[in-house]
Length: 207
Length: 207
DNA sequence: CGAAAACCGTACCGGCGGTACAGGGGATTT
DNA sequence: AAATCCCCTGTACCGCCGGTACGGTTTTCG
Image (tube, rainbow over all chains, first blue to last red):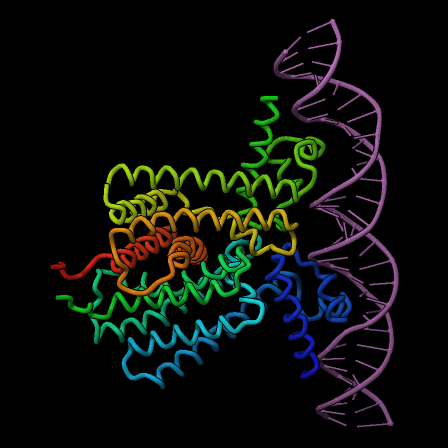
């Protein structure tokens, strides 16, 4: 029981790295079993087919992703009472975390999956959709708290504002990967931070 | 001579749609030749291998992409004299164009390529990088013009601000694809528009 | 008309996803 | 101590796919 879980986790580790660099189609099972030191039969003992691997991979990724966000924004909540300050601090903590990744962000599996729609069954696509909706709910909740205290200086749909956080993260990953500038992602998060700050903070009255 | 170009273009059309839905690894040559009504020999007459197809695909995509941006922002420049108003109008035109796509944005090949790095040679990756840098230069130029007239209300790096446009587009594509909400992309562009408006427009009349 | 361009047909190779099935070792239960 | 279950290994095989090789044929254009 314990041993099986461990092997399974090792396969997922190897697969995740490979998939994020070459896509699902570009990742061969032979390659995965070679790197994990397992046989083909062993692989198919853990995963019925490549689709099952993809699903397990995605679910594990999402779980881990949620855990990280929980940690960061819980910590930010502890450090600041005001919901806006807390959110802005959370973005700063997130930017720091992203900035500290040695080789830059490895890539987001949610993005990978959405660029492979025809290859996977509805189940996986639905899991992917739910992940994005979970992000929306998370950030929507934060913006709702902010809006109790602050009034946005531009009319804005709260769901669209919440999605903006995910958008910047996904887009930032693409840009920093394409440019091979690992720092780019953190920078974009900080630009978003400036925008949110501007949106809610009352302007300095000039005279 | 004329006929060859036409067939080549047809292959690229079919390949682009397939690649954006299934990735390069998930797109088979057999499938492409079946849909274009060509033979395998015919295919390899036009493209040495799959890598050559990828390169041609990417280059054509980038070219077309640039053309669209040229059109939109040239038109915006004609309709508004002020650089800020012109840029904001451009984003609105862009959002309208994205909104009018019947099945939503089909996906960005630049993003696809950057999620497949290990599968392609340096040549393609460099082409991809240059495309993103071209976007940066384009939008940087616009923000420079804006900054001649307006002062940003938050300290911000101009390159990072320029990249924000690409970030929102790439991220918006990912989100709208994952959620299967075609409208999402245009919405995100409009949120960005609000942010840029806030960043440059003085809230209080200067005296 | 002739030559080059634009294909077609066929045969073949190795790699990959996936299946089938038989068996084995080690830990746990009875 | 025996039985059982989990976690694999080994082998053989299938069909699809990317790619090569190469000879032949049609189409196009000067």
